[in-house]
Length: 142
Image (cartoon, rainbow, N blue to C red; front, side, top):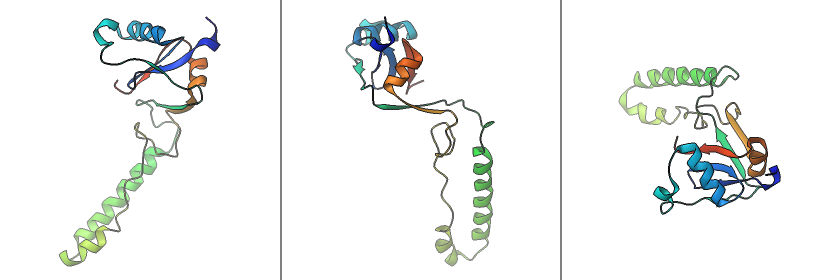
């Protein structure tokens, strides 16, 4: 089996690198210990385009290699100060002041800020197939 024959297949939840849909089932069964017969009426594996970009987040990515935690902690402290100041105001003035409280910064599913790429790899499906080789790639479920 050459690397050029490998592609990414997905069931929408599970993503595998395999040669064809039957091989994708084989990879999935090998990886999960499940039987195809128990699931083939529930879902199937579809070939993903080699140029489709797939982002995989590492939910266990720590904060040792970025400043996301420090920025999020600073934001939390700033919001706490603003809320305390608002609550010290008369009730009539509070409604207008709540609008000034900054929203929580947007983050990846792993908790890192959107501008951070720690634990967040983006590659085309063709690149994932070449890098990973035949096997289970990722899941949206576990």
